[in-house]
Image (tube, rainbow, N blue to C red; front, side, top):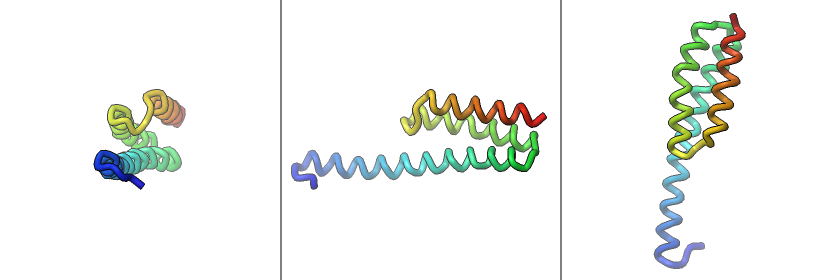
Length: 87
C-alpha cells in the first residue's frame, strides 16, 4: 500500500487513468464489433460505413496511449481487407 503522500497521489492518478483508458478501450471495441457484425451480415455498405467510423477511433486510441500504433494499423488493415473481399 502507498505510504508517502507522493505515492498516495500516484495511486489516485493511476486509478483515474485506468478508468479513462478502460472507457476508451471499450468504446473502440464497440466500433470494431459494429464492423464485425456488418461483415457477418454480408452488407458491404454497412461494413464500409462502420469501418470508416472505426478508423479514427482506433487511431485516437493510439494517440491517447491505449493501443500501440502497429496494433491499430494491423486491425485496420485486416478489417479493410475483409470489407474489400465482400464484393
